[in-house]
Length: 186
Image (tube, rainbow, N blue to C red; front, side, top):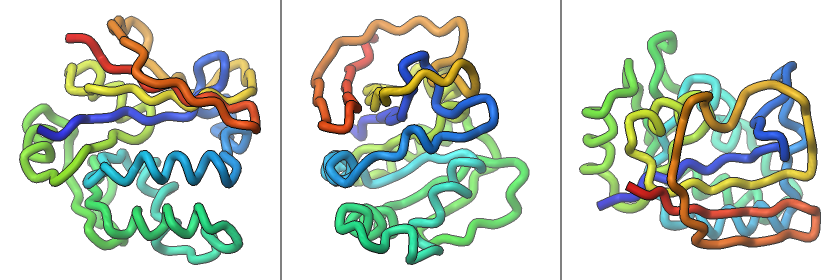
């Protein structure tokens, strides 16, 4: 059965973006992009909310997003060949290939995605991941800790959530980022 992975960049104080919505402090360098792309080779499906979809769609709609970076070019190719399910009640259509729109994030929709997946599934963005974590469907949490303290914004984990996590892997990068992969206990 497909694993559901919550993969997220986080400031040291637990935010995915700051109070103004900025996450430029989390932009990975070439080595980090290459490592994350290698990890994503097992992923067959991305689960996205509207905002994350609009952010990530550039990997298909804007060729300049990957220019000058072999690792980014490789990620763009991976993104384009991967299935994407966008959960949104406000979007009327999607504009990337291999993408479908679902009106609500439900346990039934997640189980359908698992049944259809040919590999792992990632849930992208802390808002959608909050729902997935609360439903208890997340199997793996991959945190990319960034050397920044931003003081507020969008939290990586929702308030009131309790998880039993087991460290499966730790990887350090020369730019000060650290990736930690945890299996979620059940």
